[in-house]
Amino acid sequence: MNCNRQTFHKNERLSRKLLIDKLFQNGTSMIAYPFRVIYLSVSQEIEAPVAMMVSVPKKKIRLAVDRNYIKRRIRESYRLRKHDLLQIFSGQDKKLLLAFVYLHDERSSFDKIDKAVAKTVRNLLTVNGLKE
Image (cartoon, rainbow, N blue to C red; front, side, top):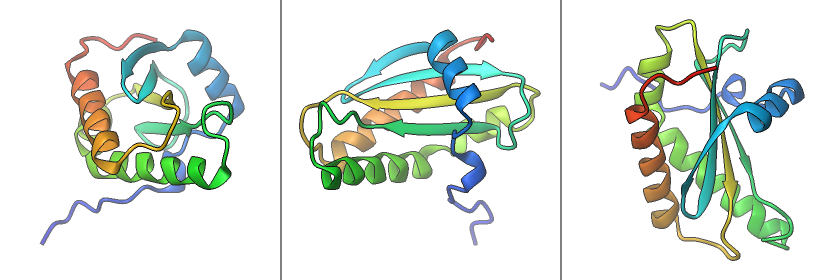
Protein backbone atom coordinates (compact mmCIF):
# COMPACT_ATOMS: atom_id res chain seq x y z
CA MET A 1 0.00 0.00 0.00
CA ASN A 2 1.26 3.49 -0.80
CA CYS A 3 1.93 5.39 2.43
CA ASN A 4 2.63 8.65 0.58
CA ARG A 5 -0.75 10.30 0.12
CA GLN A 6 -1.14 12.51 -2.90
CA THR A 7 -3.08 15.36 -1.40
CA PHE A 8 -3.02 19.12 -1.77
CA HIS A 9 -3.68 20.63 1.65
CA LYS A 10 -4.67 24.21 2.36
CA ASN A 11 -1.30 24.95 3.99
CA GLU A 12 0.39 24.09 0.67
CA ARG A 13 -1.45 26.95 -1.05
CA LEU A 14 0.31 30.27 -1.27
CA SER A 15 -2.19 32.83 -0.01
CA ARG A 16 -0.34 35.37 2.17
CA LYS A 17 -0.11 38.70 0.34
CA LEU A 18 3.30 39.47 1.83
CA LEU A 19 4.77 36.23 0.46
CA ILE A 20 3.06 36.63 -2.93
CA ASP A 21 4.45 40.15 -3.29
CA LYS A 22 7.92 38.92 -2.33
CA LEU A 23 7.65 36.09 -4.86
CA PHE A 24 6.69 38.36 -7.75
CA GLN A 25 9.29 41.01 -6.85
CA ASN A 26 12.31 38.78 -6.13
CA GLY A 27 11.45 35.49 -7.80
CA THR A 28 13.07 33.84 -10.79
CA SER A 29 10.86 32.96 -13.72
CA MET A 30 10.92 30.44 -16.52
CA ILE A 31 8.55 29.58 -19.33
CA ALA A 32 7.01 26.13 -19.54
CA TYR A 33 4.35 26.82 -22.13
CA PRO A 34 1.36 27.28 -21.57
CA PHE A 35 2.50 29.02 -18.37
CA ARG A 36 5.19 31.13 -16.83
CA VAL A 37 6.53 29.71 -13.59
CA ILE A 38 7.92 32.00 -10.89
CA TYR A 39 9.81 30.48 -7.98
CA LEU A 40 11.69 31.71 -4.94
CA SER A 41 13.46 29.95 -2.12
CA VAL A 42 12.80 31.55 1.27
CA SER A 43 13.53 30.80 4.89
CA GLN A 44 10.23 32.08 6.27
CA GLU A 45 7.71 30.55 8.59
CA ILE A 46 5.42 28.79 6.14
CA GLU A 47 4.15 25.41 7.19
CA ALA A 48 4.61 23.41 4.01
CA PRO A 49 7.98 22.83 2.33
CA VAL A 50 6.53 24.02 -1.00
CA ALA A 51 3.71 26.59 -1.30
CA MET A 52 2.04 27.01 -4.69
CA MET A 53 -0.45 29.36 -6.35
CA VAL A 54 -2.14 29.48 -9.75
CA SER A 55 -3.12 32.59 -11.70
CA VAL A 56 -5.22 32.64 -14.86
CA PRO A 57 -5.59 36.24 -16.09
CA LYS A 58 -9.05 37.49 -16.94
CA LYS A 59 -7.57 39.30 -19.96
CA LYS A 60 -6.55 35.98 -21.51
CA ILE A 61 -9.50 33.79 -20.50
CA ARG A 62 -12.71 35.81 -20.27
CA LEU A 63 -15.14 33.22 -18.91
CA ALA A 64 -14.88 32.35 -15.22
CA VAL A 65 -15.90 28.78 -16.00
CA ASP A 66 -12.87 28.36 -18.25
CA ARG A 67 -10.52 30.07 -15.75
CA ASN A 68 -11.66 27.75 -12.97
CA TYR A 69 -11.36 24.73 -15.26
CA ILE A 70 -7.75 25.60 -16.09
CA LYS A 71 -6.87 26.28 -12.44
CA ARG A 72 -8.32 22.92 -11.38
CA ARG A 73 -6.31 21.12 -14.07
CA ILE A 74 -3.05 22.83 -13.08
CA ARG A 75 -3.57 22.07 -9.37
CA GLU A 76 -4.42 18.45 -10.16
CA SER A 77 -1.33 17.99 -12.28
CA TYR A 78 0.84 19.63 -9.61
CA ARG A 79 -0.72 17.41 -6.93
CA LEU A 80 0.30 14.31 -8.86
CA ARG A 81 3.88 15.53 -9.47
CA LYS A 82 4.82 17.45 -6.32
CA HIS A 83 6.34 14.48 -4.51
CA ASP A 84 9.87 15.02 -5.84
CA LEU A 85 9.89 18.67 -4.75
CA LEU A 86 8.61 17.78 -1.30
CA GLN A 87 11.37 15.21 -0.80
CA ILE A 88 14.06 17.80 -1.48
CA PHE A 89 12.62 20.70 0.52
CA SER A 90 11.15 18.84 3.50
CA GLY A 91 14.53 18.19 5.12
CA GLN A 92 15.84 21.74 4.70
CA ASP A 93 15.35 25.09 6.39
CA LYS A 94 14.57 26.62 3.00
CA LYS A 95 11.03 26.65 1.65
CA LEU A 96 9.94 27.06 -1.97
CA LEU A 97 7.33 29.53 -3.17
CA LEU A 98 5.91 28.67 -6.58
CA ALA A 99 3.46 30.45 -8.91
CA PHE A 100 1.98 29.25 -12.20
CA VAL A 101 0.73 32.09 -14.45
CA TYR A 102 -1.28 30.88 -17.44
CA LEU A 103 -0.22 32.44 -20.78
CA HIS A 104 -2.33 30.75 -23.45
CA ASP A 105 -5.42 32.44 -24.93
CA GLU A 106 -7.70 29.41 -24.77
CA ARG A 107 -8.28 26.24 -22.80
CA SER A 108 -5.50 23.68 -22.96
CA SER A 109 -5.98 19.95 -22.65
CA PHE A 110 -4.97 18.19 -19.46
CA ASP A 111 -2.17 16.38 -21.34
CA LYS A 112 -0.56 19.66 -22.40
CA ILE A 113 -0.87 21.08 -18.88
CA ASP A 114 0.48 17.89 -17.32
CA LYS A 115 3.52 17.85 -19.63
CA ALA A 116 4.28 21.48 -18.77
CA VAL A 117 3.99 20.84 -15.03
CA ALA A 118 6.25 17.78 -15.35
CA LYS A 119 8.78 19.88 -17.24
CA THR A 120 8.60 22.55 -14.54
CA VAL A 121 9.21 20.05 -11.75
CA ARG A 122 12.17 18.57 -13.65
CA ASN A 123 13.63 22.04 -14.21
CA LEU A 124 13.21 22.98 -10.56
CA LEU A 125 14.95 19.78 -9.52
CA THR A 126 17.91 20.47 -11.82
CA VAL A 127 18.30 24.11 -10.76
CA ASN A 128 21.34 24.19 -8.52
CA GLY A 129 21.23 26.39 -5.44
CA LEU A 130 17.86 28.11 -5.32
CA LYS A 131 18.77 31.45 -3.74
CA GLU A 132 16.78 33.79 -1.56
